[in-house]
Image (cartoon, rainbow, N blue to C red; front, side):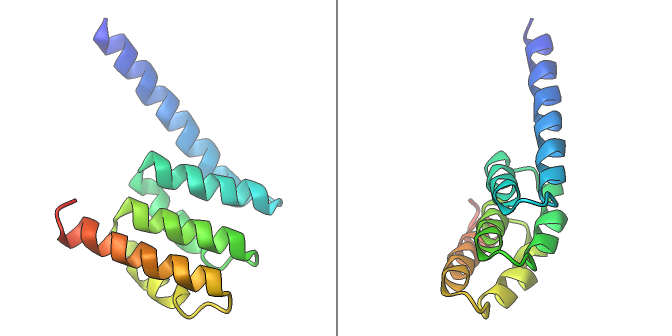
Length: 112
């Protein structure tokens, strides 16, 4: 039955989102980075606020991936954090934040 498959997929999605949200605060930066990446790919907007919080992470790789994810999610709540990240001390973070901001704008205003 399609309903059972849909319910299973929805339950798996929920489990993954919860796991990745928890990993955003993991002690190891590679877990935080991976979680931000996965949340951006899953497209679940419940991740927006937790990703905004990660934009202050001490590891620039985590900030970079969180910025990317905020762009992918296309939620205006991420706008302020992306604008701030354009002034990050790390050049790669600044570059990704600029790209993510453009993606966010297209998703919000361009009908994507």
